[in-house]
Each structure stands twice: as structure tokens, then as C-alpha cells.
Image (cartoon, rainbow over the protein chains, first blue to last red):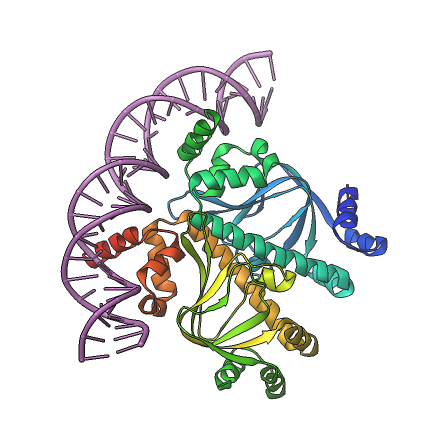
Length: 192
Length: 192
DNA sequence: CTAAAATATGGTCAAATGACCACATTTTCG
DNA sequence: CGAAAATGTGGTCATTTGACCATATTTTAG
């Protein structure tokens, strides 16, 4: 169950086998069915989550009830609502499984202890956070500046594997455009 | 010159007088004229900057030459291109003064030493980074989901002081809408 | 203090977008 | 395996947006 995580650690970090074993020993394995929630708005995010296999989406609901997707999280990546997790405040967002998903989770107390006890993990976590801010800024810039067609092309280029795993209405919700506009773009690209 | 920074530190952190003195002693005071650049795309960001007084904008240029503003930085706030600064890579963005601005700057080597020597500064810096990710996520959500009118209302509510200090074309560039749309919105709100 | 530059707004028009509906096809679920 | 749900696309139409231009006013710079 956790061998995927160990492979991930070996390829992405320089943690030792002992350190990885220590991290795994406090992990709580879990799975979510399709459409099952990991976090619902109004709840406090109490776990740091690693996705062993599957696909999650983090989304918010606008005042008119429409769903807008902030990010997708797929195999071998981490997810959480950092604000809710760190401040222990009610989340404004939801995290839900798009397909059956297997995860490892750590409580905040356990993970904080790991960060204290394993400096290399602390460093790696900070690297993830800073990397997240860089990609977040690029995402904001693209969202502000790109036409709907450029947004879709950027998505396809950046996440070619996700294209086949996601319904178009979710891609549209991620790009901030309507399903109608997205199918128009696809149509004009197919007939070019 | 630096008393503003000391007041800021006292009101926003629990750093001691000695620690603040230590930080100030390595600060490089500077000023920028209106329209002067702090950072230009293609350059490496070599300083962490605190704004004593004034107003900066961080922006990128889209492929068609249009400017899109990611953020404004006003008195008593920090700014830098974190990705360029940490990775020592060429920045994709620009930071320019909108009005005459006075700053304090630290080189990366000096600031890293401060972070090592003053744990409270390290903690505070991490708090700033995480707070930046929360506001960034909220900004992305608003940019994806809000109508042009909602974006403007949110801007006015969040930054009432900036409204008078910025030309409308810069507010439009920050909101990702055209100047024309922005003046339509203002017109309809004035005549309500 | 004045000329030049910048800004804010209105008018006009074309293009783009999104809502709604219908239908065929694919996927899901029990 | 079959019914139900979900998906993807096309058609239509109203609304919104943005580009361009003109004008008046305000701000800037020397």
C-alpha cells in the first residue's frame, strides 16, 4: 500500500530509508470513492494528504452556485487546505475525489512532530510550499491574461494526461470559461 | 529613515529592540522615482524589499504586449519575486514604482544570515509566506469566478485607499478586465 | 506657470461569451 | 446486462466585452 510513497520519496527527496519508514509509520491509509469528499467547506482541514493513486479536485462555490476548480491533484502529489490546516479555521473550499483515490494522511500533530524530528522533511516541505507559490502565481497570470483558447492550449500542454481523465465541464471550471466556449475551441481546433 | 520600519516591526512582530536593530543595520535604504523599476523581466531578483512609503506594482506582459498586474505593494509591506530570488533565475515579471517610493533592501546572503541568527524573524517570514499563499488563492478564486462588477466591488472593499492612488487602467489590468468595462461599471454604480 | 502628457468618459460597433435547449453517444451503477 | 445518468456537441439568441476614436479634464514636468 505504501510502496508507492516510498518510491516517490526516493525519487523526489533525499530522505533516508529510516526517515521514510518513520514517516510511513504515522501515515493513515485511506481511500475515497468517486465523488466522495476529503474536505467540505465549513470544515477544518485536519490532515495533510498524499495521493498514492487517483485524482482529487479542490474547488469553491461562487455566490450563484457555480463551481470553480482551483486545482487538480493527481498521483504522487500532496494536497490540503493550508489556511484551514494551519489556522484551524473553517475551510472555504472543498476537496473531492474525481475517481477512486487512495491516500495517505497525517494529522497535524503527527506531521508537525515529523517536521521537528526530520529536518530534511522540513526542508522538503518548505520547498513544496515555495514551489506551490510559484505555480500559483503563474496560474494567476495566465488566468488574468490569456484568452480562453490560450488557457485551453496551456492546460493541454501542461496536463496532457488529465485531458482524458476529466469531463470537459471540469476543465472549463478550472479554466474559468463556460463549457460552450470550451467545446467551440475544441471544434475549431479539430477542424483546422 | 528607518523609524517607519521599526514601528512596523513593533506592531507586527514580537522582535526585540536588539533584533530589530540587527535587521536594520544590514538594510540598504533606497528610493525609486515614479515609473522607475525595482526589477525587470529577465533580471535575477537579488534583494528582499520592504516598502517604507510609496506604491509598487508587480506585473507581467502578455504575448500581445498588454500589461497584467499581479499585485500592488504599498507602505509597510514586503515585495520580491520569490521564485527568481530563491532559485536565482531570470524573473518573468517586473516590479515598478507607481509613485515615488522609499524602500529598505537586503541582499539574499544578508537576509539568510538574519533568518539563521534570529529565529523569530524566520518564523515571521514563514508566516508572511503562508499568508501570501492564502490571499493568492482567494485572488485566484475571485479572478476565476467573479463577474467584472464583483471584481471591482471586491477591489474597492479590500483596498479603498488604493482607489484614489491608481489610474483606472491599472486597476483594470489588476482585475483582468478592460478600461472600457471598468468605466461602464463605475458609470452604472454612480447612477444608481 | 504653461505646454505636454495622461486620464476618464462617452459613442459606436464587431466579436466573443454564456445560457438554454435538444439530441446522440458514452459511461456508470446496481 | 440494461436502465439511468452523464457527457459532448450543435443551434440559437441575448448579453457582455473590448477595440477604437473623440473630447474634456486633470496631472505632470520642466
